[in-house]
Length: 158
Image 1 (cartoon, rainbow, N blue to C red):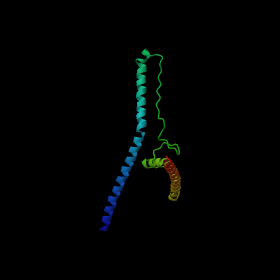
Image 2 (tube, rainbow, N blue to C red):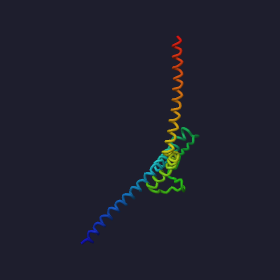
Image 3 (cartoon, rainbow, N blue to C red):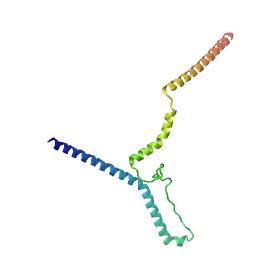
Image 4 (cartoon, one colour):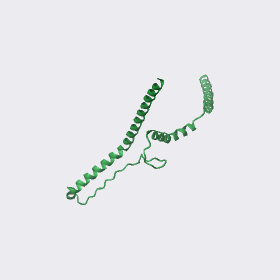
């Protein structure tokens, strides 16, 4: 009887895992299609411009402006789908893209972390700044005391 329960539990677990795998595959396919959507849109716009240009050249352009020639150039400024590591264009999946972007942005973060101070170094710098401030305060107190003495001496003479 326990064998039947193990089989049922295994079957349910297997169905859940397979559905999860199917959802992951469909999600990755959707991401791949969305990644190429901008390129496809630009290509369709280019085809529309070329068709329009051909329509104009066949109908009224020759009559109104016979010497004009138009050339339309369209292209991405930077191909975001080329991987810097090996120059390939293949889709690597959402997680690998996230990992790649994290790796790219991790370098400046690591550099910033390397430049941060340890707690001991921070406390030493803080003590140095406090000493400098206290020295300036002492100098100002001495100047103020001399000024007060000079003012009292001037008031008593008058």
